[in-house]
Length: 110
Length: 114
Image (cartoon, rainbow over all chains, first blue to last red; front, side, top):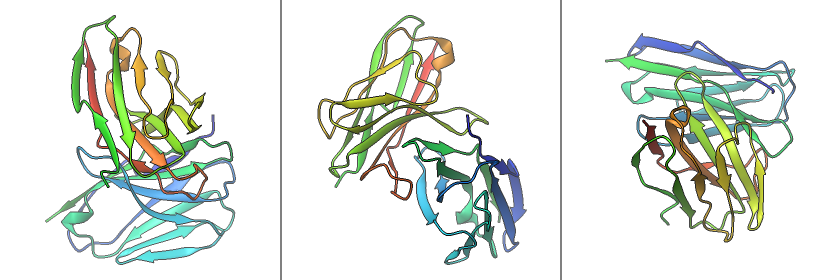
C-alpha cells in the first residue's frame, strides 16, 4: 500500500498568523490534489498540481508541488476563521484509485 | 444540479443486520467511488466503478458489495454489519476518474453498528 503522510496532524493558531502544512510520499506521483473538508460535509477540491516545482495560488492559499514529485505543501497567509477545516492531500498512483492522506485538522482561533 | 446525493444521512444498525447506502449523481459522471472515513485514518477507498456494469475493489472492500446498473446510481451494500463498520461513508463521482479529475463528494452517511 502506497502511503501519503500529512503533517502536522493537528494545528491550532491565532487569526492573522501564517501556516504551512505538508504532504509527503516515498513514491513519485504524476499529480496531486488538495481538498478541504468542513464538519458534517464531504471534501471539496481546492487545487490540482501536475508539474514538478509548480506553484499555484488561490487567494491567501499557496500550493507547491515538490521538484521530485514526492511532496507538496500548502501555505496559508493571514489565516482566517473560515480557513478552519480538515485539509487532505490525494494522489492517484496510476491505478484509477485515489489515495488520501490522513489529513491536517486546522483550527483558526479568532 | 443536485450533484452527489446520499441517503440516509444517519443510520444505526445491530450487528448482523444488512442495509444499503444509496448514492446518486446527476452530472453524467462515469467514475463513482465509495470511501469510509475513520478518525486519524483519512479516507479509505472501499469500491469504485469506471462505468455502468464495471466495478472493482479498493483498499478495504471486505464486508461490502457494490453494483452499477446505471450511470447515475452506485449503491453500497453491507451484508452483515459488524461494529468495525461503524464509520462515516462518502460517495464521490468524477468525469473519468483520471488523476486530475475533480472528485465531487456527497454529504456522507454516518453509520453506527451496535
